[in-house]
Image 1 (cartoon, protein in one colour):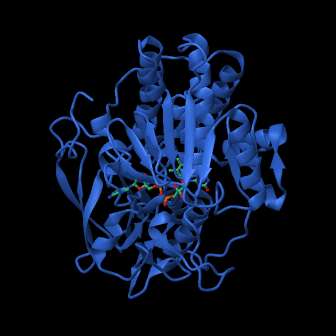
Image 2: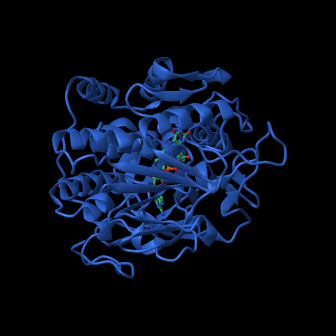
Image 3: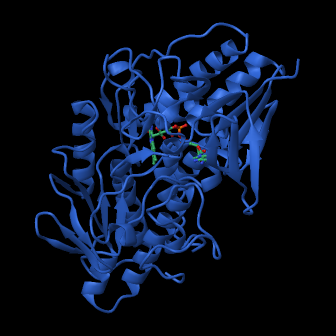
Amino acid sequence: MSRPRILIVGAGFAGYRTARTLSRLTRDRADITLLNPTDYFLYLPLLPQVAAGILEPRRVTVSLSGTLRHVRLVLGEADGIDLDARTVHYTGPEGQGGTLGYDRLVLAVGSVNKLLPIPGVAEYAHGFRGLPEALYLRDHVTRQIELAAAAEDPESCSERCTFVVVGAGYTGTEVAAQGQLLTDALVREQPLRQGMRPRWLLLDVAPRVMPEMDERLSRTADRVLRRRGVDVRMGTSVKEATHDGVLLTDGEFVATRTLVWCVGVRPDPLVESIDRPLERGRLLVDPYLQVPGHPEVFACGDAAAVPDLEKPGQYTPMTAQHAWRHGKVCAHNVAASLGFGSRRVYRHRDLGFVVDLGGVQAAANPLGIPMSGLLAGAVARGYHLAAMPGNRVRVAADWLLEALLPRQGVQLGLVRSWSVPLESSSPELARVPGGPDLPHGTKENS
Ligand SMILES: Cc1cc2nc3c(=O)[nH]c(=O)nc-3n(C[C@H](O)[C@H](O)[C@H](O)COP(=O)(O)OP(=O)(O)OC[C@H]3O[C@@H](n4cnc5c(N)ncnc54)[C@H](O)[C@@H]3O)c2cc1C
C-alpha cells in the first residue's frame, strides 16, 4: 500500500507542532507536507521586542527545514481547497501556482488583523501581526524621532513624537510599554526641543488594560505603563484617522503620524472558503479537532473553534499556548486515523500567562500565582526561552547585549508603509512592487 499523504497548511504554533509530533509518531511511514508562505516558524510573543529593537528579526524565527525532519516544506499560500477532490491549490512565492493532494488535511492557518469600519483606519493605521509590520514599526518610530529632533517648529516635533496604540490587549499593552522605552532611549541620543518627551497613548473601549486577563495582571501592567509615562485611556477609541492625526471618541484630536492597530485578530479568511460551519469566523471542529462530516480534515490553532471541555459551551481562546497544545493532540489524532496509536480529545489546564513590559518589568501568573517586577521579568524571559522551539541561545545573547549596550538607533527603511497595509490576509509577507494593488490612499514612496 502507498504511504498516506498528510498535508498541513500553516506552520505557526499549531501547524509546526502538528508536523513535528507527526514526524515522530509516523516514523517515516507517511508523507508529511507542510505548506507555508515563509520558510520559518514565527515566535509571535516576542514580536514587540523586535519592534523595540531588542531582538533582531531572525531571532524570533525558527527554520522549518532545519528543525523538522522527514517533513517536506512547500513554500506557498493556500488559496483554494477542494474537499471532494481532496486537493489544495496554492500560489508560490514567485507567483507560480500548484496543487497538492492529501489523504489527511490539517488546517492551521492562524489569524489576521481585525478591522473595524472606522474612517481612515485602513489607510493610516498599521497592524501588528507579522514580522514585516514589526520591522516597519521599528524603522518608522526611529525615523519619527529623528525628524522630530530636526524639526524647526514645536507642532511638527510634537506630532512626530506622539504615538497612538489602539487596543490594550496583551499585544497593544506590550507594544506601548516597549515603545515608550525605545523612544526614551532614542531621545537620550538625540534630544528633542527643550522639555519635550515622546508620548505614547494606549486606547481601548474596555474599562481596563488586558480586559481578557486576570485582574491582577491587568493592574500590574496599568501601574507600570502609567509610571513610565504612557497615557493610558480606557473607555476611549478612535472615531476617525487622518494623515495628520486621530480624532478620539471623546472629541479630542491627537496630532500624530503613528497609529498602531492592535484591536485583535480574526481567523484567516481561508477557512471560510470551504463552506463548513463557522463560529465567529473560526472553523468548527469536534473535541478531536476533526471537521464534522469530513473525518479526513482537521483544524487547530486560531483558525479553529475548538470546544473548551473545561468551560462547556465555550471555545478555547486564540492564544499560542492553546495552538501549541492543539498541535500535539491534532498530530496524535491524525496518526490514529491512519492506524498509529489512539485518538484523544483536547483538554487543557490553564498554565497562566506572561506579559513582558520591557526593562525588567513584566506581569505574570504562572500556575495562577500573580507576580510583578523583577521576578515576573525573569519568569517571562525564562518562559519564552523554554517555549521557543529553537534559536534560544541567540535570543538570550540579544537580551544580554541589551543589558550591556545602548540600543541601536538606526532605521534601515527596508519595509515601507505601503508594503504592510492593515488590510491583508497575509500579514507574514510584505507587499512588493508589481504585486497586488496598493490600498487606497497610499503612495509607494511613503
Ligand atoms: C504580537 C503578538 C503577540 C502575541 N503574544 C502572545 C503571548 O504572549 N502568549 C500567547 O499565548 N499568545 C500570544 N499571541 C497569540 C498567538 O501568537 C496566536 O494565538 C498563535 O500564533 C496562534 O497559532 P496558530 O498556529 O493558529 O497561528 P500562527 O502562529 O499565526 O500560524 C499560522 C501560520 O499559517 C500560515 N498561513 C496563513 N495563511 C496561510 C495560507 N493561506 N496558506 C499557507 N499558510 C498560511 C502563516 O504564515 C503562519 O505560519 C500573540 C499574537 C501576536 C500577534
